[in-house]
Amino acid sequence: MKRIVLFTLCIPLLAYAQIYKWVDEKGRVQYGEKPPPGAKASILRQEAAPASKPQPPADVSTQEADFRRRQIERRQAEEASAQKEKQRQSQCENAKNRLSSAEHAGRHFRYQAGEKVYVSDAEREAALTRMRQQASEACR
Image 1 (cartoon, rainbow, N blue to C red):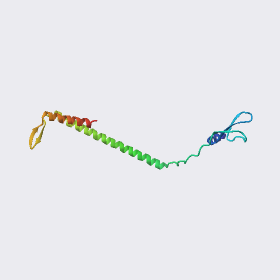
Image 2: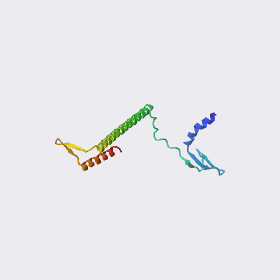
Image 3: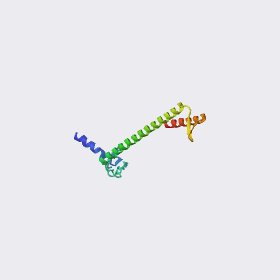
Image 4: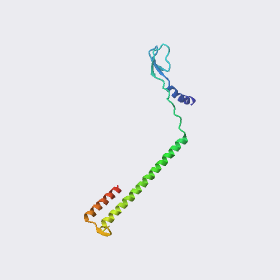
């Protein structure tokens, strides 16, 4: 059992070794880390280049602080989005109510210079068209 563990631990060390290929005096192809003297060997694999600079492990407290900051930012964004949606729905309801009131009202009038002036049918239709457009935009 100890040999298996030792062999398993040595495998990564072998991965970094330089591998050569040569033909021995009997004509058989051989592979190894060092060719015998006088043998015509070719390199199959170069040694692995050393890592540029190992990155130090990040501090756990820093990672946790970043994670919590992202959670807070996400929660704030969701709350802002929910607030905007609620405001949009309120504007939609108000626009629909104004339109409904205007459509079901009798003759429209306005006060001008202290006197009641009735709105013409063309002006009423134009106002209703504007209100419908506003309701449509508010309720997208």
